[in-house]
Image 1 (spheres, rainbow over the protein chains, first blue to last red):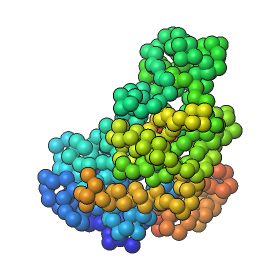
Image 2 (tube, each protein chain N blue to C red; image 1 turned 60 degrees about the vertical axis):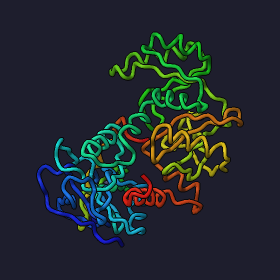
Image 3 (cartoon, rainbow over the protein chains, first blue to last red; image 1 turned 90 degrees about the vertical axis):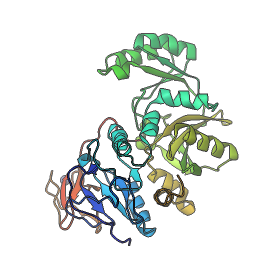
Image 4 (tube, rainbow over the protein chains, first blue to last red; image 1 turned 45 degrees about the vertical axis):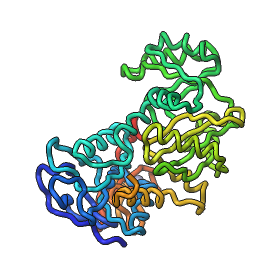
Length: 335
Length: 54
Ligand SMILES: [Zn+2]
C-alpha cells in the first residue's frame, strides 16, 4: 500500500481539473492535488504521478497495482471530467501517464498537460504521429527502417491507379483507425473498386484520403513488440482469428497470441521504431516477410497489453515495467 | 448486491472494484461501469467510440 497522495482542495484555475482519485482504490470527494510550488510543474518529492484513464480496464488495474507495489503515489483522473485552462497553474504532477482510451481525447489530454508545462507519457506529438498511418510511414522510412511499400491517394478516384501501381493483393487502410477497423485486403481491380466506392460514400473528408500498402506474405501472423523507455520488453506472435477474416492479426478482432523469441534484429527494429516516433511506451507491429525479413507495420502509442501479458506468462510484467518507467520519470532519472 | 440497470439482475462485483471499472452483467451481457464504490453503483458503460483502442 502506498501512502495516499497529498491532495488539496478544489481551486479554480488549477491547470488540470477533474475528478481525481488518489493512491489505492480510495475514493475521495472531488479533490485536486496542490502544486507544491506555484509556477513549477510537478515540484516536490512527494508529488504523485497523474494517471489519466476514463475506462479502468485490466491493464489500468495492473498498472495501479504495480504503482502501489512500488510505493509510487498516483492520482487517477477520469479523462471525461478533465478540463484545462490556458495560463492556469502548471500541472501538479511531475509526470502524467496517459491511458485515455479514445485517441482524440488522449491526444488533447496530452496537449493540455504540455500546455501547462507538464510532462506526459506518451507525448502529444507521439500520439498524433502514431495516430496517422501515413505520417508514421514517412517517419519510419526517413529513418531508413524497412516498411511495406506504401502509397497515399488524395481521393478514392485516384486510389485505384495507386493500388494498381502497388499491385494486387493490396491493403487499404484508413489513415486513422484503431483495433484494425476498416482495414481491407483487395485481390483484384473489381474488389478494389468496390471498396473505394464504399470509401467515397464515407462522410468525413479525412476518410477519403486512401492509404495503400502492398500485401505482405507472412506466415499468417504478425509480431507485436512492446518497447518501454527505449528498451524492448518482449514480443509475441499474433495469429489472425477467424473473426478477423483470417488475415488481420489484431487481438481486439479475436486473434490469438503466442510468445515470440526475440532476435537482435527484432529488438533493434522495435526500439528504433519507437524512438523514431518519439513514443516512450510503444506497441510496435512487425511483419515477417516470407518468414524472413522483418518489416515495421505500425507503432501504437496507446498500448493494450493484456493479451501480450497472457502470452508472456511470468517472464515479464508489462504493468510493472510501465510503473517503473513512470517512477523513474517522476524522479527525473530517465528523462 | 448491485443490480443491472438494464435487466435488474444481481451483478457480482469483485471486492476492491475501482470507479470507472467495467463489469458485465451475466444475465443480459450489458457492459456496466462502476460509477461509485461502497456501496457499488452501476450504470450502463459508455458506447465504444470510433477512435477507441490502440
Ligand atoms: Zn443485465
